[in-house]
Image 1 (tube, one colour):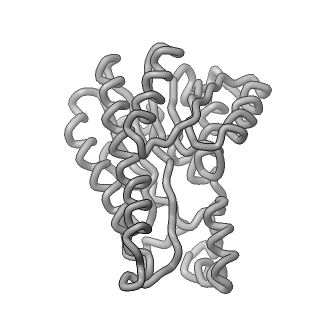
Image 2: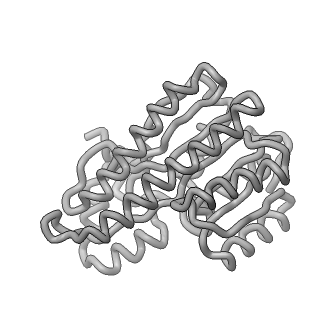
Length: 256
């Protein structure tokens, strides 16, 4: 899996929310393209199995358990990466949660707080410590996982939409601030992607999957690997003149 000729060869990369879905797919794609990957999420069993899988395929990987919504865990993930592998070259801030399709006037504060803490504070925490580490070694590339919900409105998902718009804002602000110091910051904005969260969302909302497919020009949901490929490209030198972008990976959803 670890390819010395891959477009991330020699890079040290951190992936958050890496135990399943887009995060796990990114761990595999980054490792396949030659990166050493450090993974953080809350579910140790899944992380351990994924690291074992990557290592068995010839890749280099390590993990730690944590919740990046807590600043001490985000800092610990970056410190672990630097202490073990010497530096941090790339990061994919993928950790995030969704929410039920609920009208705004019926949504409780606890839903808003949970979504904003993970989706916004988690990215904020990671950015600060990742940027600090990258400044110490001359630069790097960061990709935040936003959503088409960060580019357009989605009904009955106000806190999620607000959180992903905030991720896009943080991405653009960090890109503008650190472009001259060798750090590129971009975001991917996935359309509906077949992950654990999405499968559960469809199961709890009969008919929703067909509705989503009907709203997407390609007529399907994305595979997690399709989002991971975009994130890997944005972390590589192949996108060396790209920063501050929120790139839709959505089957044409935003282009209607």
